[in-house]
Image (tube, rainbow, N blue to C red):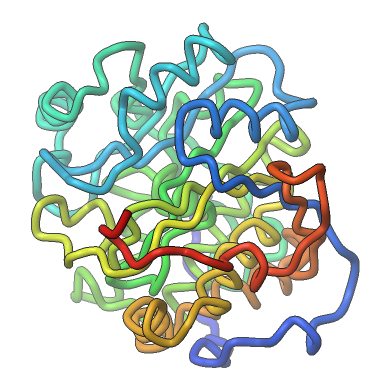
Length: 333
C-alpha cells in the first residue's frame, strides 16, 4: 500500500564534494568523445552483459520540437544494430502539456520522430507498486504498470540541467520518468495543496527513492548511458522554451552503477573552465541538486568513486579534467 511518510530532508545539496573527500569502493565508468550512433553502440557493448530477454529502453522523448533531445535517428540506428526487438518506454506527465494524456503523448511522439519502433506509454495500462527499500519518504512507488513486464532496462539519458533537480541524469530519467503521471509523480511533486510544493533536498530525496524502486526491481539487468550533448540548463520537458545551450558538448558515459555514472557526469561539468560550466553549476547549486548524489550513496545505490575508462585511447584510466581537455565552446567547430 502506498504511503507518504513524514520525514526531514537532509542537507548538503549546494555543496560539491571533491573526489578526494569521497570514500568507499570504485565502479567502472566508460567514456567516449564519439557523439554519434556508433559512439552509443560502442559504449553500450562495454556494459550490456546482463541485458537479456524483453528489453525496455527508457528515454526522455521530449516535448514537441524540443531541440536538445537525443536525436531519434541516433537511437534508431543504435536499436537496429544492438537491440532490434527492444521497446522504448515512457510515462505521461504530471503537468498539463503535450504529453499529459496518452493521446496527446502519442501525437508528440510522432511529431518528434519516435515512430520507428514500438513505444510503450507504461501508465496507459494502469499503475503498479514497487517497494522502496530503505526509503524515509516512501515505502512504495507507483509506476507505469507495464514496466513490470520487462526483463531488462537500458536507461538512455540525455544528460542536461533541470529546472527542479539542478541536473537531469539517469537518476532523474527513471525517478521521474518511470513514475506514472497521476499517482507516482504526484507523490514526488505535490505537498499539501501545492502541486509543485516539493523542492530542494526533499525533492532530490523523493525522486531518488522513486529511482531506487526501479533499480531494485531490475537488479543486475539494468544499465545507464548518459549522453552529454546539447546540455541546456533546462530539461527536455521545456521543449522549445528551453534556455540556450552554453555548456560544451563532451561525450558519452556508461556504467552498471547509477550513482557512478551521474557522479562522473557532474564531475566532468565541474572539471570544465569557469567560463564553460558557470551556468550549469549555478543551476545545480541553486536547486540543491548535489543532494541527488549524496542520497543515492546513503541509499546504497552505488559508488561515488570510479575508474573513468577512456575507450577512445586504449582503455586508459583518466581524470575528469583529462576527459574535458580541449572541449570547444558550444556551437564552435
